[in-house]
Length: 285
Image 1: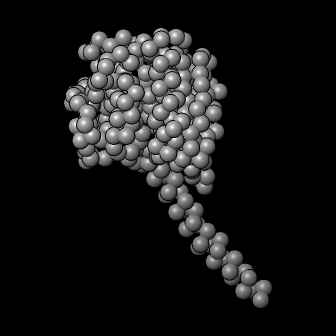
Image 2: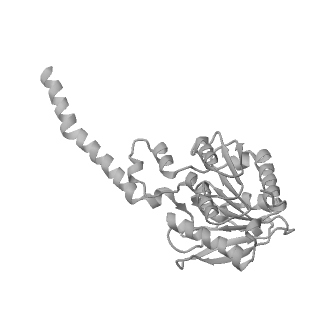
Image 3: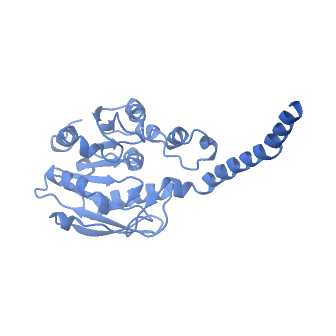
């Protein structure tokens, strides 16, 4: 019997364990090489346009600082008195999958500029972290230069990964306000939570330090997060909120990560309306 146990141990430590370790190392190395595909999930297929749900809009061509051509939509408000939302969407799909958001912002009296990062929708190139920052800058530049929109009338709104992009953009300028919705305080920490069996902190190339970005934001900040978000826990939103140094408010919604803003419409829409009224219409800080 002792010999049998020794034989089993030799098989485990001599053959099985090295193979398990090899598989683990290969997966870890794949994470390092495939960061782009793990973080970004773009779609090229356009599902709809604002015209499909009754809104007039303009197709907008943007050119990023490095020459990449980007696609965006500008949806004007019926009464142009409420300011403009520059919307940074999440890591999946494209602008055509944000119909509910575009329609809601329009109903709240805001102009909307929503753009696709490089590699998404009709935008050229391949997605990257630095690319998302450059692309957001191009959208900001279009509003303040091509459309002569005053920065104090622009609210930068980002959801999920877009919340980090929006925070970085707001830290570089002084908009009327910043909305960070369902975002992570640090994407590497989120990755470590989602993949606890991998050394994500060692391997992640993406940074997206949302909580660090909001420290430098000089406008009012609205943080929105769902307590039942199963992908990005509410503690991420709380850490972002705690990092804000200026005027801030936290609105808790309910629902899953990709649908909380719909499931919590009775809380979500009034919170946006109140924030827009405070930071744009009244100009208060």
